Image (cartoon, rainbow, N blue to C red):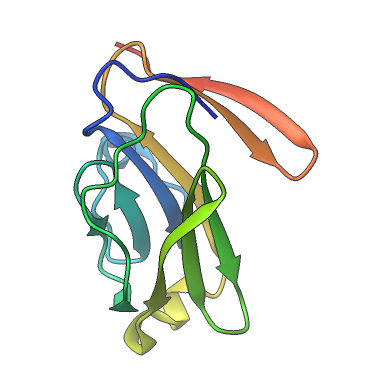
Length: 129
């Protein structure tokens, strides 16, 4: 759930990544072992394969965004308010780097705040300015 997003046209990314970013990498969004959707833009990451994901999707406060990862198909389906806006397959060259995936959320603007749900567990994550 997007609780606060001062500029819904950009600055919020979600997807999966094959490692836990550390150091200055925590400030990046484009990784060779990731597929992420950048709000107001499109997909970013080096593991993007065949896809039909909508471009320019915005995430205003009150909206619900999600990612479903299908392990068998190696595919991510992105959702906005419970409606799919496309699927992206992980390219074959990245399969080895993405045998284990981590959920990834990146916030760019101060005052962005989201309620993150992993099954039955929820946490509030906020951008630090």
